[in-house]
Structures are given as C-alpha cells and as structure tokens.
Image (cartoon, rainbow, N blue to C red; front, side):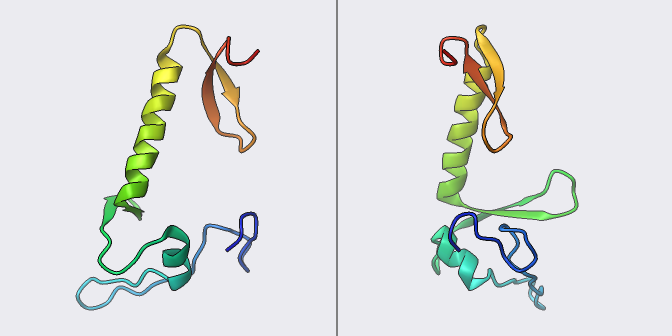
Length: 101
C-alpha cells in the first residue's frame, strides 16, 4: 500500500484478522508479506508484546536495522550535550545543541 494511504478502517498499519489453526499456525496476509518483503522460508522473530496482551512479528533483517537505529538514538540521548526534540511524526529524538543549529 502506498505511503500515507489508509485502509478501510482508517489505520494504515491494520491488515485484518487471522485465525489460529489447530497446529498454532497463522497466515500473514499477502499484502503485508509483499510490503515487508517476506518470502517463503524467511525467518521471523516472534515476541510477546510488553503489555503481555499481544504478539509482535519482525523479519530478522528489519529487527537488526531497528535495533541499530535504537542503539544510535540511545547513544545520542546519553551524550551530555543532548537536548530533547520532537520529529515530524511526533517521536522524541535526541539531538545535540550543535545539530540543532
């Protein structure tokens, strides 16, 4: 789905529902597999959501990319000259005073 396009329920991240089969299997919707580049045989990480009320699936490669991004953000935030800023998506990120000039 093109960026900024919403699905019928208005949430661009919602892909419908799946049913857990007798052997505990689910089918990842084709549209989502295509958007994430997930192919048969690819490995996915499955985590329990921190709230304990859901599951999170991540392609292994995207999790590594995400973790590297988070580590860089953490390191930037820990620098003594870091100030708090909000990006255009509303997410907080650390910037140095020098970067914000």
